[in-house]
Image 1 (cartoon, rainbow, N blue to C red):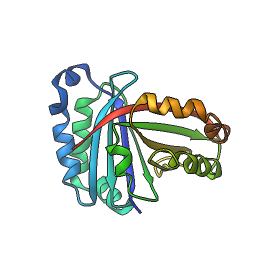
Image 2 (cartoon, rainbow, N blue to C red):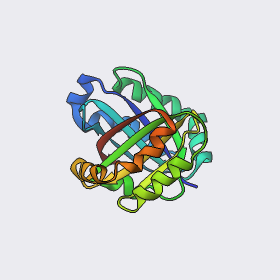
Image 3 (cartoon, rainbow, N blue to C red):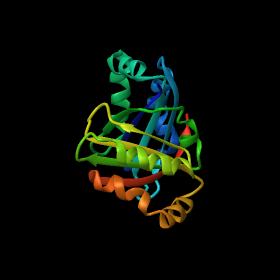
Image 4 (spheres, rainbow, N blue to C red):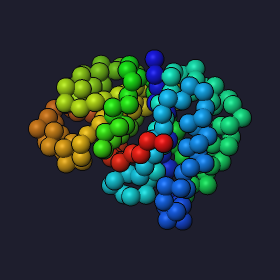
Length: 190
């Protein structure tokens, strides 16, 4: 079962000024790691300064091996050079290859903090989303009170047009969540 590691942090203004070359060291480390299938990076569209790193792994074993490898310390150090605040990392197992989500022009990320571990509302939401856009989701292996969704869209406007017509899609998930955050990013494949 493939998995996704999602890493977010406020990006350093000086590193933002350097452009894409600033992330090269971190990307080189993660993409050369055994079991890494792809890696993506970009900035949140809404604020222009929250950085996103999303890596697709062959599975939890490959991700865990990366966490235990000596290169993980170098990867973390490279991220800290880019960050201007705390780094949040989550890992989820997903049912199928999530490449279409991250290869889309815009990737939506939704981070739910849940009230419990019943996933039925999130499964229902995923089924509805998958009928209109590629979607990958799962419960975080790093914190079982977190559910992550990633959805691929042609644009933020395309997402909003679907959202406005189908507000009921989120209602069950909202009821199962204490809180949630929604953001969009244009991701570049490493």
